[in-house]
Length: 168
Ligand code: S3P
Image (cartoon, rainbow, N blue to C red; front, side, top):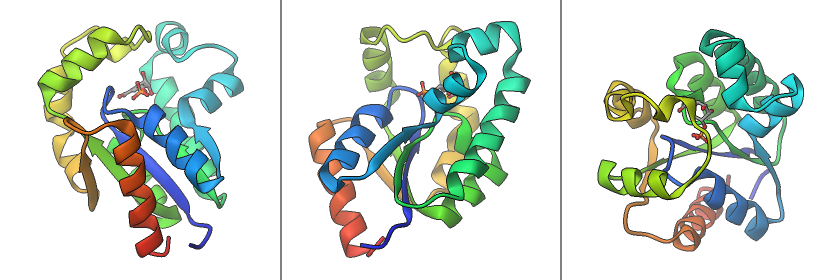
């Protein structure tokens, strides 16, 4: 396996963080979570960046973070759910390694997001509409894994196998 990044993306609630952590553990790679990196850089949680600086500012910082991380090698990168909806960000990450888009049925997402107490500013509004708006951007990513009826462990194993056969 070469040292290209493994990038895990998808809508909120598709399991990116858990699956990315497992993939990083299995491969002995460093895990980078783009939201956590943005929070460190700006010095406040994403929900407060949205509330105090606005989404446009968050997207600007996110775009810079995307380019910074794509220039590194050997990471497992868990992206924020909106990062690769942007065409430029998607191209940059696709060029930096293997990008895997996690999906899930809306009913499964609703259930997971109810159980998860994370403060997600964009989940307060019409998230189903947002998912529809983003559908074509997510679908343009060649590797898709439907997580609806799989455990994080199964999904992580699938990604590891995929990267090994694709010699990522
Ligand atoms: C967002 C998803 C969030 C976070 C921010 C915006 C989005 O990350 O980046 O609230 O636009 O989908 P998670 O997908 O990890 O919740």
